[in-house]
Length: 183
Image (cartoon, rainbow, N blue to C red; front, side, top):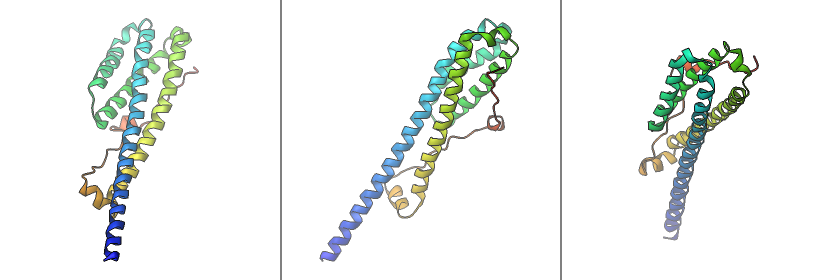
């Protein structure tokens, strides 16, 4: 009888331990997504300043500036990882266009405010990249735990669901973006 009671106690402790581990991993995924979200929001907050600085120099580039403003508005309505990843990819393309067009405006490149914004944007892009990697690492650990025995049994009992990885949706987004602020 004591042996049976001991086995039951060990099983209960093991189940609680696996459950708590799954909860910790799920929370780590949520936290890492929040870090991406914070950095993407930071980038979106920098954009109006960049657009205002660029507007005076790039009067005939209104289409690009309008696209950036529309993407910024869409960001507020995006709710899922996939939607935000898509908007992020589109915004990267639009910003790449602004930076490329700025090459045609020597006065703009010499503008101190524009240079500072470019540096802030570059720092933010680095932080976004790191945050994406951390998020994907967290999601991979969590999703792996959902699939391995015996935690997969506990995960299915308590309805834990796999999370999406943050990935580039298009071939264009997979290409390296060359941003050279020194020219």
